Image (cartoon, rainbow, N blue to C red; front, side):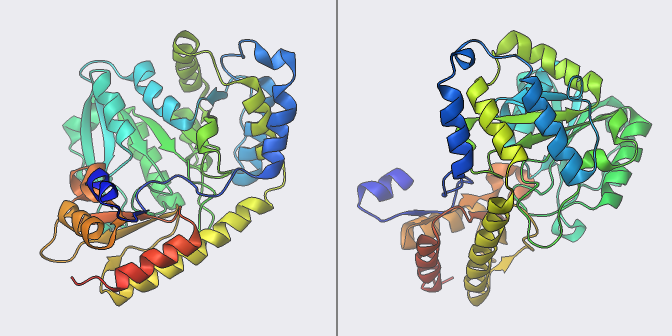
Length: 365
């Protein structure tokens, strides 16, 4: 439908993809430029990451979350966190294993499971439970068979946060059933009121947990493909064993730029949060004027909106596209429990977002 609308000459405003519209911060670009000309960086990189990059990652997590990790054994570099999330299944999921997957959720959790012969068990995320999985609703038989649980807070697509108490409940549940917990923390620095915690800061999480971090959203580096995993050394070793056999690591100049990002001035990140807050408030006001119910936006740069009676996720998405040229993502693309919602992204220039808001105000529902 997007292609057809574009062919008709419709001026589309895309609020569908979570790709930051502002450039990577200048000091990071400058670090890459300096590193790229060094011949030592033109050779195969260290598969598991430069020691200096892993040290920078460990230092960032210690400063931000109070979590201490050994850079040599408890951190591994990633070609973006997506790569690590997919390879986590390669490392630990065998045919027949059950993997607990949030629904709605980032599609790679379930797809990686399926590619490796595992069976996803969907954990519904409901508004009445603040978009946290209900651990008590997981059947005992499923919990006994489960190898791995995926979580991700701040949450894509619902924009929810998890509390330290919820993470403590997860540790108790996972310990009781012998389950690995993999926490996707790609949006840790995109928040509005309270800074989200790390799962690894939970007592007992170091025995069974691994956390995935990305520089993509925090530093506007989506195209650079760099991130890291941190956590239990056996889990890091398993992931590292896969990576040494299937990829050749992150370009070292990009890792040096990543060091500049993780250890440098963090005030631009605060500036990005302020920009997303401005955009969030602009969009929420328009949605309220239409009578559309937006869920609380506590983290990420997404707005999760319930569709009104008489619509499905797909039909409302089609109406916005066809009638006002605004592109959003249907919630059922994130799983069965995403039906009945659409997701807006705030990663479009503010003047274009303001134009999308004006178009929304003309919509008849």
